[in-house]
Length: 492
Ligand code: NAI
Ligand code: MG
Image (cartoon, rainbow, N blue to C red; front, side):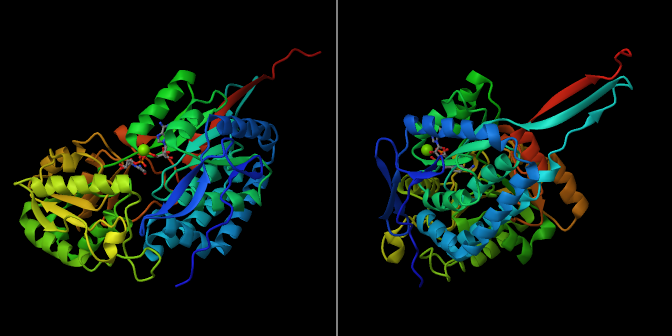
């Protein structure tokens, strides 16, 4: 097995320079598959945030005037550079997140390059309109950048999620201060280094630090003109609260407890495989779109679960850096304990039937890391905590239904509304159901990841705003200005 190249210098990116934190303090980065410290990164605080925001503010005065397609060309340069370093990036992501190299980390590195390629091509699309107010007036609109964007990202797909903020914000002429997640900063720092080789200094600044000091200082900074956050709903509310104090626009991509609705005519292998994908088992279900509430029609309930148990049991858990591994580890001890507590709760319920999985192994190689096993509780109720809260671990609940109205009501009985999945060969039936489900994204007969070009985001407490698309870029990172010109002046 090839070694992971851990960058010797894990410094932050501030004003085009690689820097430590003002305090000199650091944060240890752990390999969750071995519970060993693999690196230290700076622990930024409020003073670092001040410096980064000042640098980004200074850079904005010129970056906003760079022709959009020229900005796009720089992003395309980043895409090329990322493509040339996919393996290096993928190994770093696998090392620090515990996500399996083959099934997760390499696809993440590949999609990251693609994100820069997609948004790099959109520089010419930041268009305004002319408004027909009569022959005596010329009225037009411009889409202008907002200024310094404060971006905060989580650890579950760290490099991809960083790219989803950086590429559209910079394409539209904003500058940025981005805070990486404390649990997965290494890939993001490598991304920052690659970006800096193609950008003027200070356009992008990347800090590493904890949420409660660095993140909170960024959210509260008076010179930030836009906040873009991905993470938990609880922190999303704090960010929105800070934004409300200054009427700063926010984009929030938060949690989910997404329903997967299986009709009797989908009692087939393709649906079983689709459900496994939709549940994101191979990323330990640490995904906001995980289809974690499985609504199975009563007529196929037991048979479908048996197929699901059989197919899931072929997933290979192991060292994330091993090519043969399908499924890696939970990110850290806190999340691991949280997942275990949900499993324990299921095991203690008399009315829950364990179909597969259970508590993590306590001996053997898997006990060295935060390995959680795919777990399924059947005969669940939509009222259980297990069915209502985002577990962010490989714990699936299967709920029985008979009438479509009932399953739609249960699916919508959630404060979340991010993704949903409907499984039926009868497309009319599937689409009628898809249209009634309260979710930002419904997939029919598949459970794949987000696709560039298609707006993605949540309803209800799953968030505000859309990402992954041209419209998402324009809505999130530009503001419209109207200019009205009187053409009817009297002759001089
Ligand atoms: P979190 O929401 O605390 O962390 C996400 C980011 O927000 C990190 O960069 C963190 O440093 C930052 N942050 C934390 N507190 C902050 C504050 N007061 N001000 C500003 N920034 C702050 O998520 P965490 O603790 O890592 O995971 C907890 C749960 O959140 C998970 O179990 C899962 O349910 C959910 N989650 C959802 C994600 C999604 O993609 N929707 C991603 C990560 C977590
Ligand atoms: Mg937290």
